[in-house]
Amino acid sequence: MSKVLNVGLVGFGLSGRYFHTPFLSVNPKFRLKKIASSRPDAVRAFDPSIEWVATPAELFEDPTIDLVFICSPNETHVDYARQALEQGKHVVVEKPFALSETGAVELLELAQKQGCIATAYQNRRWDSDFLTIKRLLADGSLGTLVEYEGRYDRYAPVPPDSQSWKELPGIGRGNLYNLGPHMLDQALNLFGRPDTVEATIRIIRPNSRVTDYFDIKLGYADKVVRVESNYMVYHNQPRYRLNGTEGSFIKGGLDVQEERQRLNQLPNLPDWGVEPPDRWGTLYRDGQSILIESERGNYTPFYDNLYDAIVNGAEPAITPTDIQQLARVIDLAMESSQTLRTISF
Image 1 (tube, rainbow, N blue to C red):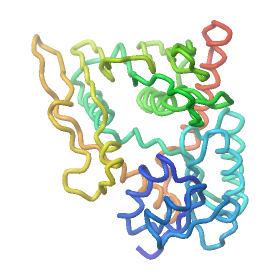
Image 2 (tube, rainbow, N blue to C red):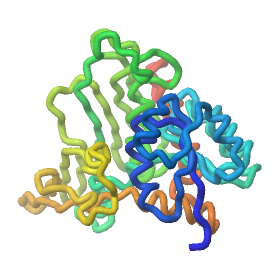
Image 3 (tube, helix red, strand yellow):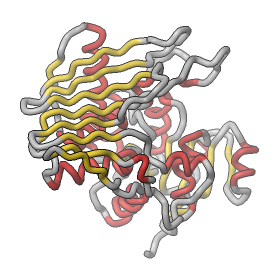
C-alpha cells in the first residue's frame, strides 16, 4: 500500500463518532486528520491528535484532505457534499444521500465532472442478518422466493421538550429518511428496480411532529416485497420474514456491531460481528425447523472498497445507479402516500 488517505469528518454525533471512527482508526489505509463539529470538547476527548475545526468550510479548504465523510443533519447533506466536491474531495454521504432524486443526480454529476468518488454509506449491506439472507437465497434453501418482508421497529415515544433535530419538523425528517434508506437499499440490492411503489407514511406517536411510520410495497411481477417501520412497537416483531416455494425463514434481533461500537469496542477484535445463537434465524422446510447460524457481520469491506475505488479505480460497492434508484423510490413513496395511489417506477 503506497498511499494513505487523509480523512475529514463533518459532524461528530452518532454516525461520525460511533460508526466511522472505529473502522477508520484500525484501518491503515486511512488517517483521520480533521473533524468539523460543534462539539470541540468531544473531539478532543476522543483523540487530541485529531484537529478540530468549527466549520465544514475550514475542512473542505484543507488541501491535504483527500476524503470527507458527511455525517451532519439530513438537510445539509447535499450542500456540504457539493462544497467538498467543488474542492476536489471524494465524499461519503450518510443516508439519506440526498432528499430527492434531483439532489442525488446533481451530486453524482458533479462528482463525475470533478473526477471524484461520491458514494453513500449503506453499511447495512454488511449486517449479519442481511448477509445470511443473501446466502439462503443464493443456495436455494427457500426454493423460489415469493414474499419478502423487512421491518425495523422501535418503541420510541417522543421525549418531553425534545430538541433533537430528528424530532423537529422539516424536509428530510422522519423515519422514512432515517431507517428507510437502509431497508429499501437492502430490498433493491436483492431484487433490483421495482415496477411500482405503493406507500403509507404517517405520524402515529402522540405529540410527534415527524412521520414515524411507513409501510412501503415494491411491486415485482414474481414476488411481494414489503418494508415497514413503526416507532410505537413495544415488543418487536421479527425483522425479516421470507417465504419461498420450498421453505420460510424468520429472523429477529439486531446486528451486534452497532451496540459494540457504542461501547467503544474496535472492529479488529477476533469475535467482531459474530451473532450469539439467540439471535440466529430459523429456516422452516421439509416439516422441520432448523436454526441457521448467522453470517459474520463486518462493515470493513465498505471501507476497503472505498479505498480501492479512490486509489485503484475499482467500482464503488454503492454505485451511482444504486444511489439514484433509491432516491427515486423514496420520492415515489412520498408521492404514493400523499396521493393514495400506486406509482409506476
